[in-house]
Image 1: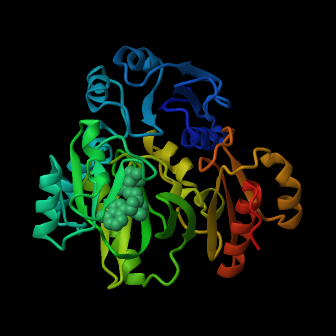
Image 2 (image 1 turned 90 degrees about the horizontal axis):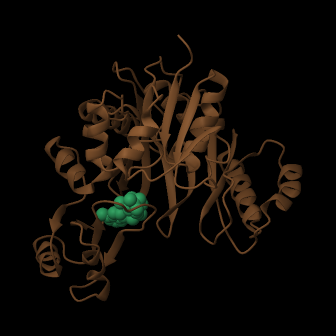
Length: 381
Ligand code: ADP
C-alpha cells in the first residue's frame, strides 16, 4: 500500500502542527484552506483554497483523500454526512463531532450520560434568562451561542436581568445556552485520543490558565491534583470518547470547584491548545496521535518525558518583529522550544507558543513565561 493521504479541513496552526507530525511517518497531506496565507497553507505542498461551507468544494477536495479530518469544528454537520454517504471516511464522524459543534447538543447528551456540568438550559430571550436565573442561584449567568464560538467569542457574562450585554447573544439568530456562572478554583483539561477500532490513550490531566477567555498557560500535569481526581477525569474523557464514538483527539475542558468537584465545560474534537505541551513533554504528541488515530494505526505512548512541562502561548502584542527576540530567548535558555505559526502579529492573536520542561515547576514556569513575554515584547522577570 502506498502512503495514505490525510485531508485536513482548515488551515490554522492545528493543521500546520498535525502536518508536521505526519512528516516523519511519510504521511501525505492535502489541505483545504480559506486563503493561501493561512498558517498551514504556508507549509503544506498540496493546498486547495476554498470554502469549507460549500459541499461541492468539500466533495472535490475529498477526491484522492483516504480520510478527512479537521482543525476546527465549523464544517456544517450535514455536509459531513454527505461526505460519509459518498463513502469518504470522516474522522471524527458527524455523529461525534456535532457534540463539539453545538454546545446545546453536547449539554443534553452529557446530561443524559450523568456527567456533572454547570446547571444549564437553552433560552430564547431575556425573559427566559431571568427565569433561568430565578430558578437557580440567580445572576450572574453565562450566555453562550451554541455554535461558532471560540476563545471566549460567543460567551457573555450577564450580571443582572437588564444588563445590556444580555441582548447581544440573541442578535446572531442562533440558539443560546444559559449556564450558571461557576466559581471554579481552576480550569483543567483531560485529553485523550481514540482510534476507530477502539484503542484509546489518555494524557496526564493538565491545568489551563486563561486570560480574558484565551488560554495563556498550560501546566502538565495539573499541580496538586489528587491522583484519584486525575484518574476520574481521564476515565470521564475516555468514556465520553467511547460513548460518542470520537475518533482522533478529544479535549474535555473541565472546571475544578473549590470542593474538588469536576464539571465539564466543553468538548473539542481535534488537537487542542491544552495539548500543545505534548510536542516536547510527552513521548507521543497529540498531533502524532491524532494522525495515527484517523488512520487507525496503533497509538503512541502518551506519558511524560519530564516531571513538569509548561506551555505558554505567544500572543501578538505591539511589537511585530518576533524573530528579533529569538537571539535573547535562545541564548538565555537553550532548552526552550519555540513553535511559531507563521501568522501576522495582531494584538491578542495566538501566533505561537513555547514549551519548557524540567524537574522544578517554578523554574519551568518562569522560563516559559519569560520567553512568551519576551517574544511578545513584554519583558517578564
Ligand atoms: P469557547 O467555545 O469560546 O472556548 P467556553 O465555553 O470554553 O467557550 O468558555 C470560555 C471561557 O469562559 C471558559 O474557559 C471559562 O473561563 C469561561 N466560562 C465558560 N462557561 C462558564 C461557566 N458556566 N461558569 C464560569 N465561567 C465560564
